[in-house]
Amino acid sequence: MNLSNLQPAAGSTHNQNKRVGRGEGSGKGGTAARGHKGAKSRSGYSKKIGFEGGQMPLQRRVPKFGFKNINRVEYQGINLDTLQALVDNGIVTDTVDFATIVGNRLATKTEVVKILGRGELKAKLKVSAHKFTATAKAAIEAAGGEAIEL
Image (cartoon, rainbow, N blue to C red; front, side, top):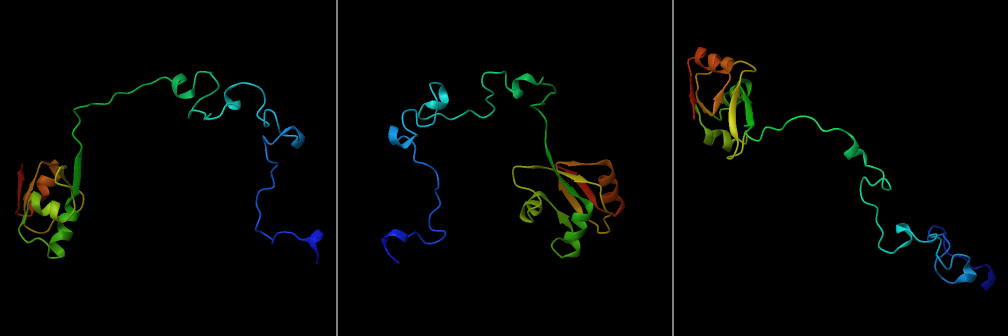
């Protein structure tokens, strides 16, 4: 081993590229391989997302359609089988109010709750919520319970 055959340890070097902008003698001086003029040759250039070189971008070419109702009320749905599971686990016995729903993380305190009719309810419950579907209300009352709208 001598100075003429020293080389870095395997895997310790990564960059095999020629250093650009380091003089004419390097072969990558002058424009530093960026070509002449134009945005790409300037420092600080970054292409905007969706930019197509001045051509009308796709998101502006495609026609818009549809309608977004700003007054839409988004309900957090809770099914009857979920309420039955609370009864089975001994979490509730006779009443399910909004505080119980929030306490069991079925909804947050800002959400509007709607009781939905999936599953079956065997327990007699007094359920308080903002809305009920017709099937849910019928099932609660058939089990001997009460559906109270807030």
